[in-house]
Image 1 (cartoon, rainbow, N blue to C red):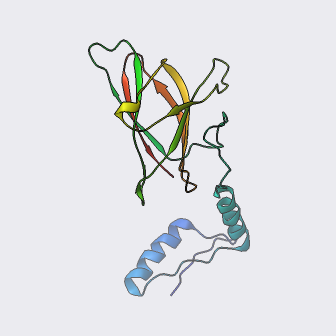
Image 2 (tube, rainbow, N blue to C red; image 1 turned 45 degrees about the horizontal axis):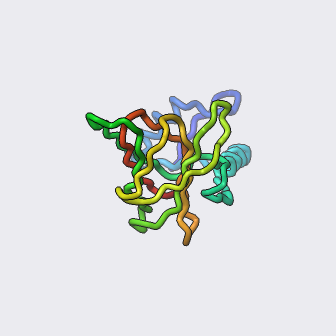
Length: 168
């Protein structure tokens, strides 16, 4: 049983429709109005706008992706006597696959926003890098799939940064 209240202009009254709908639910259930053609077209356009097209990304090329992919988790540890800024890639994981191999690059960002020459980041404590503090753009990819992580990070001075990547 569907109950609709229309005003003189032909539009439904939301308040009365809601009250009657609640009453109808108590009695026998309430059906929803099917969207008109114009509402359906608007919804389809919205879905199409949100569709994300995959882009071809090479982790070692100094270019930004259209959007940030995946998640970059950073834990900063500031030791008492750390004269330098260090970066350690502690792991690369995919939510459904678990640990994965990754090719990871950091690109220093210049004052005018350009990405400079890439710095390769290896996994593990023995592969720690000493870098200058500041802004970096990070890209990482899995060599055997289209898993990807990209985004901007900020390195604090005189700290050790432990980075874990969660691929998208």
